[in-house]
Image (cartoon, rainbow, N blue to C red; front, side):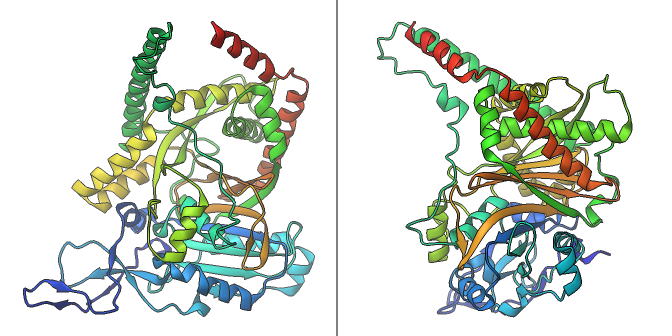
Length: 518
């Protein structure tokens, strides 16, 4: 059995004292244990054991002493980084708990012994091979579930690199990334992530009935229709979601679809820098969002790779579905997480896994005009924005877990992911450069492994770049460098097509202004 997939929970008798009334009493100075969250328990199930791998490209060689001191002063102040998951043998039916333990920092800062010749001749390949090896190595659940791997040799993009690996039960990518970045500098100069959009319902809220505006009734009617559309779209999306989790609706076997057992096979992690300025230029021309552009680039790249590999003519439209990860937090600024890290306690930003999911289709097809990929992505994204699918998936998983337990929930979630083709995620990072314990960060490249997908796509913005990160099963998708080049070429073609298209932003703005005056 692959140890990486087992829950490997530590089981021991916990020292418990009782008061005169027989109630539990906490020893003086002892930290109170904290139950593992429902989603955290889900990630501890053998069929749903996921890990996060995040590579930080550094602008200077690694100072091990500075790294140790920084971790001791910051990350070890947070309970998750100095706790292990424990089952209480004295009570039946209890859930696993986070229990404080002593952290041996040498066990969490790993300096691998790599071939000096390989690091000198092929540093990029050496880095990729080492990251791939992490997807095959088990993590010791008898100690806190995180590690820093020091890769202190220059590559084409950085003077050195740190690979951070953590079990997904510690938290989702947003919370872990935010905490790492919050550790990078003073709270007075911490960068902030981009603000989240106002929800659809709030944006369409009618004006006060006391308003004398003649168009108040029209606004109210539009709001009612929009609300009804949200309800209808949510019902349709929930039906598709339930049918997928129940294995009644499955993506057909195709080039990108993960084969049986793909979650146990090693993954190849590739990344490449994309220009955020190019993406924003297309955004302004098409009058859409950055996420719409990224969805269009993804659809174009998958189409290029598919038709090149299969030799098909492209006359038919092939639809594959991705499981799109959605952050459900009300705010994503790093200031609050920084204060949480310093105090060692949660505050109004809840720590852990605050995730929802939605099923997002990608269309594999050929277009003479590259901007058609972005246009179709805009329509898909607009449709998904008028749905509460991601909120429902989070709520339903919690309810199923309360009623049927973690094993049943893990089986349903596994079926959901298994019956889709791709895992897709897009995270917003700092807009200014940060330094981790004195090491300037040049890029951030997060990914995950353990999911039943042959292809996982992550986009991570940082400063003026977007890092594209692919986690690929090479046994199923050979020539991974070719797939990466397809993403690069697709953005290039879309950018060039946008250059020859009149900018519609000003025209649409003038038209909206005229409508606003009537």
